[in-house]
Image 1 (cartoon, rainbow, N blue to C red):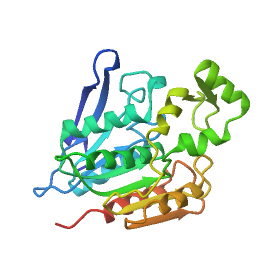
Image 2 (image 1 turned 30 degrees about the vertical axis):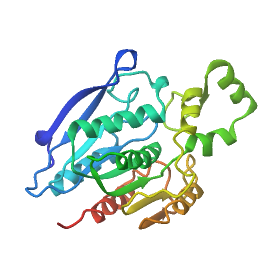
Image 3 (image 1 turned 90 degrees about the horizontal axis):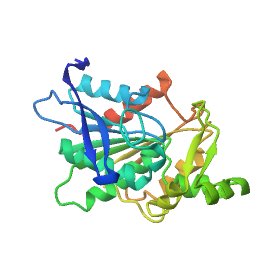
Image 4 (image 1 turned 180 degrees about the vertical axis):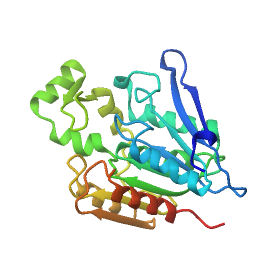
Length: 267
């Protein structure tokens, strides 16, 4: 059963006063009597929860009788809030609020691009809590942890630095949209306080990374570097020789499904 009958669409409010924003969620309820982990989709920069990979993850959950949780960050998809107000801290707060609302006991986090950064920060924050979902595993697709410091700041032109200083943002041509990518000074400054590749990252669970070697946005060397910060975990890195950043082709989706399925523990 993978139809929409078991899907619940809802909105929660995160923050208060001028910081309040409505976050849209799609929750697939589990059908198995003995509940397994819920799949949690963490999307990328400017993506939304209706994209190919998110929808395929939800479909896989439906096939397996498991729960799935998707949501749009503020400024993305059908959620409220302005995109330019977005920061890693803000979007992380929303991810935590979604889990607090739905209260899954166990989860498998699936983070795409920037969502990989959010996933790793989410694990860190959940570990600080006495009552929190247990993370059974993590799948990272073209992960971009620390991308503001690692991939943007070192490559800024003088004109872009000037734009950040004077206008508070810079624009970059997007390969995926006629609208340019916007990177704000707030995003970059906030990114520095959310860096994860500064020491050993202990997730306490298996991690599977899927990375295209023809990714123009996140070089595969970045995934190799990330692996070095995960020495305590069982890490599998799958390099896809002809893979791009999206990894949304049928053959890429099959790798995603296989990676997620392999993390489901047999109770």
